Length: 335
Length: 269
Image (cartoon, rainbow over all chains, first blue to last red; front, side):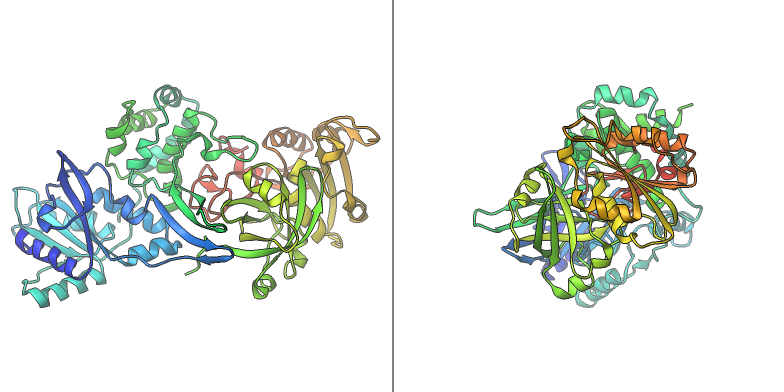
């Protein structure tokens, strides 16, 4: 599919009432926003500052509205097409799908969302020489959940996309588009093989997971205690941070209001506080340890894959200059 | 799909003041069918709330055998929500989600030692009530409160003592108090604890470390010591992350854990 056809396809999605959301360049940075024109989309593959998180896990969502003793939950969701989702953000979606499998609000959103991934992939020009491509499909694409995937040739700046599908929904959409547009459909289907590669759990993850629990007494965390200012920025930009609080928001009318689910941050002091003021995460060292523990021990224990996609956004936004790869290195090198 | 975030309505059927700070509420789900099907295991908790004042977790503290008719919670006035709940009257309504969590191990037999500190007696009460006629259950209860005015369920002690040994202690000497004075650990110096017993603890975090020391001195196995852990719990279904303990969640894998499960998790106790 070339760029022109892709733009046609996006226009066609808009006509089908999809709100199309994707990366656009604004003031020199890449942001993810709803678009009006397909030409606004940026397919350079540059990492956007924020991930696609808020379009699947909103920062605030209404669980139900109450009026005296009448509670109404609204489980309707608008149709959205997330386009240009990077491998990093697709990995985060794997985690959401596990964490929110029993969450009817998330499921309603997901059912109305078309996920269109995009990444540079090794050269696919020569169809007779498919070694690398197969490897890529087997190692990466088979272990991600998407509806459609746009593969861009890595070796040259190509405006050609190789199209893959990863779901029945993706196949159906492309078949419908083919019928209506005359696009010579040549997409390939990839069957999802679960989040974990054939060779088993990520060895890097296993190494960190083994070293983490015994590291609390080391100076790694004391050093971070001195540096981290608990601003919570990393938790906002992190595509895999999903913790939340429930809170009521009364209206001005008597006995009316709504219960909301809002993003929270485990760096905030009251995160672990119980009645009477006791905090189970007492200081910065314990709070930052808990953040790393969640990503590199608890999530692996729960789902057998890492709770970090490796995008590095946390390092980019940290005002104290804390770099996640340096912290992980010191955990791994712990005696 | 089941929506765990949508609460049911419960009506207050009875109010019993326990102490100046603590009230026992008897609740009944408004929907008769829901109440008929309501079941809980002692040790489980529910999220009780008031629209506009959010929710908080409370242990269900009534006899599980009555759960198709009604259930009870004990509320201490501590924050915005509980202050508001204390102002409610009979026939007022609350919201309820749950029950959540695992509850105490079922089918316990032999010597059972229940240790409650302060409001920690609340989650233990369903066990006491459910096993009053249980011939396979030899119950010993250690209960400690700060002062005489803080003792809860006072009018039930007589009944309990028909089927259990109840030992009370107060942190401070109070007028007309003839019982033991001292922290709950001092009861261990006066009453022998059998090494084959199963101990179930519930109380403030500070109590656990010292009581466990005493239980270990008495020769109890780590696997036979159970603790009910208090944590901040928003969702009740192991998702929101507030109540994580190592790789577990108090609301889902707990709130009841064996000491064996917890002893190597930093910050668990």
